[in-house]
Structures are given as C-alpha cells and as structure tokens.
Length: 80
Image: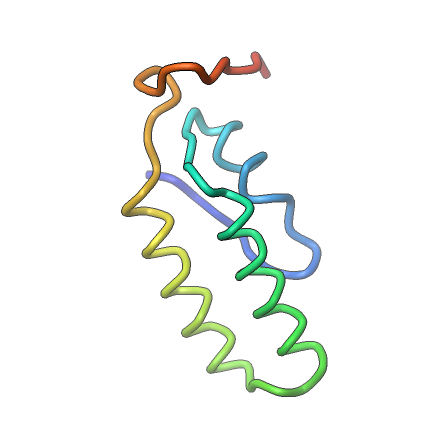
C-alpha cells in the first residue's frame, strides 16, 4: 500500500513515491494540483471538507497511475 501525504507542509509527491519504490509520469501536474488545493484552502476559498474531498480524488487518480520503479524503463532508483 502506498501512502501519500498532501498539504502545505508535505514533502513533494515525487519524493514520497520514490521513497516507497514507485514512479508516476507527469508528477509535476499532480504536484501543481495538490499545491492549488492547499492555496485555495489557506486563502479561505474552500472549506476543510471540500479540501479533503479534492485530496481524496487526487490520491485516487495518483493511485491509478503509479508504477513500481523496477518496471519503469529509463528511471534510475536512488537508494535510501
């Protein structure tokens, strides 16, 4: 099971996935969405419940697209 933490103080999605042995294409796209959700919440444009729903939807999309690093060609895994 992959664990991803989202929020203003969370580590980047790429770093979290790689530390667990996973990779996702277009990680910058997903990171921008996560950051946008945080900004909207902090600025008071969305409520806590809307923020949580958006994060759940984002995590669901990320979960559908992640791949184990061993199966991704051209991506070298750093040893932690």
